[in-house]
Length: 360
Ligand code: GDP
Image 1 (cartoon, rainbow, N blue to C red):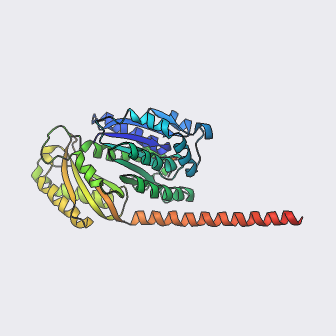
Image 2 (tube, rainbow, N blue to C red; image 1 turned 45 degrees about the horizontal axis):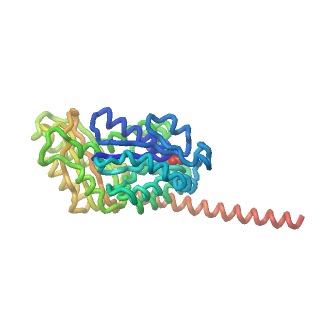
Image 3 (tube, helix red, strand yellow; image 1 turned 90 degrees about the horizontal axis):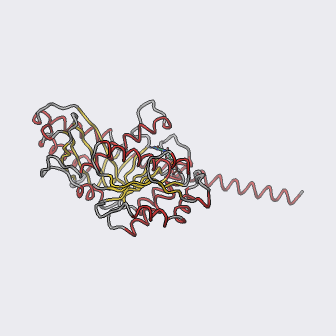
């Protein structure tokens, strides 16, 4: 799926960089344009991408801190410049635009939903959000910001693919030191999904194409991506169980939004050397997904890759039930309530101080 990637904020820029790199290193050619947008100059300087600095007149290149309302403002004020920079990248070949952001921060959290809305007004291709949710140990400001941003992003975008920052983190890896590893995992999984529709070798009826990705995301809401890989025998007939068990692992323990148990639509992409992909295995795994997710709409196909291993990539669109998402929303609501209470207390004590000042 020929895609243009726009990273907003620090996480957005780094993930777009990792994705562009993965695509180029593998020669897939699915990423046809990329851009990083930020209000913090130093975050842009470290990226080997074309960049646009926003909010210069307001924050002078120093970023918006965690203020996502200011993030929306600076994107709004400089949106013409951002759209101008995107314009040359969304060529006639483009099939989708992805706006990538960490939803818990300021610039990406506030700016990405606004940018998505503008892009949807201008372009006919679908505009997707790729949003990173804060891990459960991140502070309450991150949770509040992400809750607000998620609400707007899902309303504006054609679909919002969510990656929970706890999902693809290795045990014992701290979040800070783990960003690079997490970003690489995001790049491999999302990069394979984009490349799946680009397959050129071994073109056959069973090969996945871009329209299947687009149809799985069509209908909007939240989407999640899962991945698992395994060693395989040289002969497809010996690999029926490898395909089904790898698919099960991708869905049960490999999702970007863990504990998603039902969705409106699904897509199973089995990647590997064509001669080792068991057709019977793909069919069985696809039916299993339909039963597991409680939907009749699970597409399936192959992605011929010269890789020695076999990988199952599952994309779920219109997520209906996810304990992880519910847990996050509850955290965000709770943090928002606490913030309101703090503000009320601050206002009350300021009032008391004013009265005391008046008495003295
Ligand atoms: P912004 O620059 O103001 O948009 O803020 P950030 O992009 O730093 O957003 C903060 C959120 O993104 C937090 O939830 C961080 O955990 C997360 N984050 C920051 N950098 C990265 C990164 O490189 N990778 C990932 N996966 N998450 C990140």
